[in-house]
Image (cartoon, rainbow, N blue to C red; front, side, top):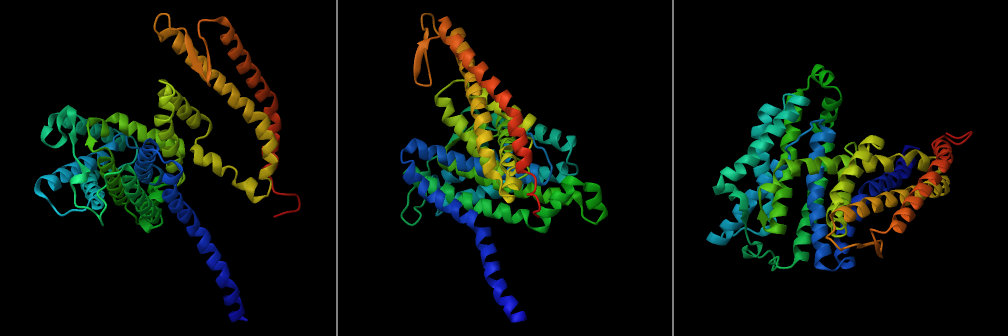
Length: 429
């Protein structure tokens, strides 16, 4: 009887393992085929930037999401890793060192971890305001040193290098952007897997316990300070890897790579994606990179829209975009997810039209106030019109008002459908 149960349990375990590894397999396949879908160099460059931001955001989430440590200066470790890699790149060129380029991010990671060990030795005794203020002070200090210590940081101009002077790696000299893309994709998969495995180690799990209740963890015999320290050092390592990849991709680093603006940006990215989920920073990095690159080509106000999205996420969806997706898991488990289709269409479509209408009003106001004298024509959604005429304003205001009115009228129906979808079936489990 036991042999039969073991035989029947084997396929079940194999199925669970395949489901466990399936997201990683799908991610690897997507990383390989995306350059064949988006073939131009600009798209490949955007995707490379996106994957670097993903590594940085995942590393930051190790600190904030898992350890509960809010840092206002975490870009320092990415920047220092990038500067160190740039110096190694230049030494390889000057002295002909036999160092393959794909290994360069590892040195950036080690340098970032080394600096994190120094800062973490006195900053990780607490995770509240004290840690946040120390991180802010360290970030400002290093940003100031980047102007003063010219030998390492290069002053205001930064330092640059040439990745093509390194030792070829199996004949690849990284002359083409697609070669750099695959290098970044490789390090993305390696870093993501290692960070995921770290979250499953005893230290990673204790980081969650220390985040939620440090006194209880201390009572059970675990040192909250050392748990934070290990998480901090691991985060610094992967930030350094992201910095090394940035140095390889762009071949230049400046003070902007480690200042408070960059630290605030990664905080925004992580919160936007969702700090409570491992895949949250991935979503946030992709969304923000698209806003920063694609949307910035269409409007000068992209930062305004990114800030508005961030505020709306914090106010209405504290779990971020990942949390918004995970809210639908109960409905999917109960088999009622499809019942939300029509209510979503009735409410969210008018809401989206209303939001686009507000964006049109913002763009029209900006053009009206800041356009050159005599430049009255502007283009929105492939439509050219006179921004100084009354008719476009009245039309946009009317469409926006009607859209929000419809959304408000249909909102109760969506609320009722949502409650029903998240309720167990009658007579079911």
